[in-house]
Amino acid sequence: MNFVKRAGLSLWARRGRTLLTLAAFLVISVMVLAGILINDATARAEQSARRSVGAEVQLDVDLGSLAGPSGGLQAPRIDATTVDALGALPQVRKYTYSTWDRALLKGRYELVGGGAEDPMGPGGTASVGVLDSSLLPDFRSGRFTLLSGRHLTAADKNARRVLIEERLARKNGLEAGDRLPLTGNDERTTADFTVAGVYRDPRPGTEPDPEYGVSPADMLYATVGGISALDPEGQKESGHPQVGKATFLLRDADDEAAFEARAKRLAGARLDGFTLDVNDKAVRQMTGPLNSIRSTATVAMWLMGLAGAAVLVLLVNLAVRQRRTEYGVLLAMGEHKGRLIAQQALEIVLVAAVALGVSALCAPTLTQSAGQSLLGREATAARHKLDSWQPPRPGSTGLGEGIDPDDRPVENADPIGRITVRLDAADLTTVGVLGLGIGLLATALPASAVLRLSPRSILTKGQ
Image (cartoon, rainbow, N blue to C red):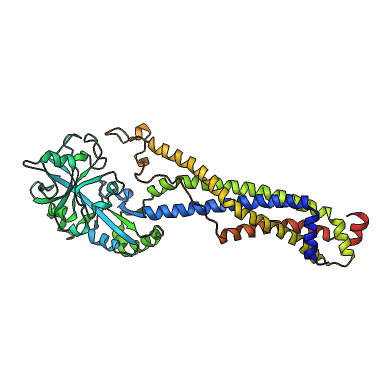
């Protein structure tokens, strides 16, 4: 009899065992396929988050390089032309850089105050020069709001424009388009700036800016050229503005390594004293729940898959031992051992194919429901943790209170709470290969042990 027909008759004659084997295969297929589907869905969601946020690379001072030869602190600087060259690399979508200096308001113009008592001297405040103010983290996150006017852009690089906070504008009766004279750190050089826009900083005026120590209401954001105009002596050495930090927004999150490599080749020793760090805090905040359910799904997949494989091995091993007499009769009739093994393998393949088909029909729906439920709980817990974070009290770093300021949640970066499960041919192929491999291995080991015996020994001694 043809061994293919014999395999079909065997499966039908042993329907109970066939159903048990099918159930074991179905458990393996569904659990492995569910794990793969959740991994794929979370990977797609994470990639989508990375692309929506965009890779942000920070050029900042390496704190380990601040100690100068005399034992004092020396902050390194890099020419703006070098940063412009890095910003022109093909991986970069947008970039900005900043420098800062003390600026003074004199005459009828006054600071709002309210923070520390004259941290930069009477009338002095921090003036941050930026290439593109819209790329500042506080504006990108939505923490700062531009109320009127427009942002500073690269087109304003050599102009004298400034953004002022609404409380400073209200106290001095200023609005977009007005003139504001600023005096440089030397207290002699004065330049007229055009108010390009008025923005809102939600921090109270009594909470000093952690980096500059001045009241948030008195912070000024000016063009790079404007800052240079207030410090002509500082430009004599290189003839270009000196940059302390820069931000590069890449076109694709996958371009980080390529950008870093090209930036180091292009700038060379000029990057000494600086670091290139990927700021992926927003992405990590958004994808935290995804990583959690991915780990859970992977562990469950392996545990249930291994348990199902163990049951399958036991079922196949028992079935082969029960069929030793059948094997002995077939071998005595001249059947080849290879065809007997092929029959057993075909039976496994047929059962596995049915299990794979059933799992392909039900696994996506079950995985979407279970994965979404699990992700919803993780996302809710993550949002609760973010909402419960409290900043340190004004004037405190928070370290003494057990509060790390770096744990401050990123605004407009809510944890992802939804995934979309999608089944494709590659997933089915992976599960099919894995299931068939387990089934064939489970068949080959006991079958080969039995078939090493002679037909006479099987029929006469039952061995």
